[in-house]
Length: 336
Image 1 (cartoon, rainbow, N blue to C red):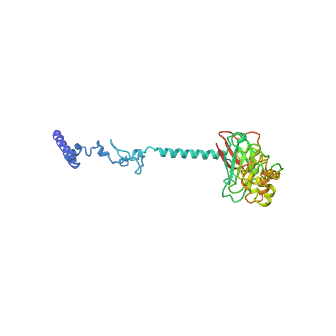
Image 2 (cartoon, rainbow, N blue to C red):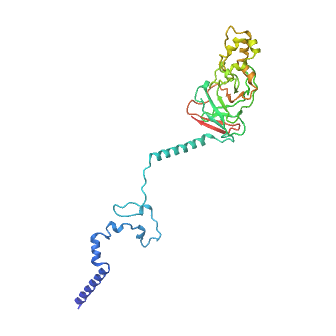
Image 3 (cartoon, rainbow, N blue to C red):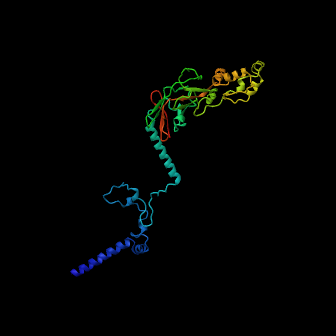
């Protein structure tokens, strides 16, 4: 009796398994697996299947995975995250330039100090700051859009590395050679400049250039050289009957050979004594100033300023110089 029961139980079990097999695809399923189309072990089975579809019972429904867990699975598949393209040389150069600009701004912020209200009105440039004392100078230039003259007297120049400092003095607006010159504040008009030398003035004072200062080149050494923009000597001796009678024909002929801003060291022996006197009195710096100082074009736009230092103020290399206003606030900075 028990044997029959076991036999029927086995038959019923097989029947149930057969029916389940038919319901899951039967022979067709076997064929698909044999072809590797939907095998759980094949790449095709996993391709396109997101890990979020494989949620375990204890995982939340809106679980978000990182990019390393998203995309295709299986051998030969690629990640959905875009691969980074190596940077081109142009991109590297641009990044390097940007990095250098950032460093420059950091350096400027560290050395500039507290900015002056005059910042942008006057620009400081190197000039010949890295030369020896006799030739050491910097250049200040007023902006082309300043609305009023900028006062420089009382301002200073300072090395941010050594702390050495030189103050901009007053000067002679109309310099007269061999006289005690009245001192006035140095002002820069729109677009005007000042050549600020570290040493002593060759003529004893700071001064504003004019159309006669070229004559001073023949008396002292200036760095840089003064412009030779003097009036032509013939302008000092107009051709009139009175002048011909007083100075003589030879004087007129000789004056025509003289270059502008040239001092007459000697004259031909056949010129009149009056001509000799005229040459010494008129073709000179003071004679030129006397004859031309009332002209509208007499004054130039450049000042020669001397800090009267007994030694070099600026390092020859690797220097940082700041232009400071009367309150010690920074107007501009140069590096070299």
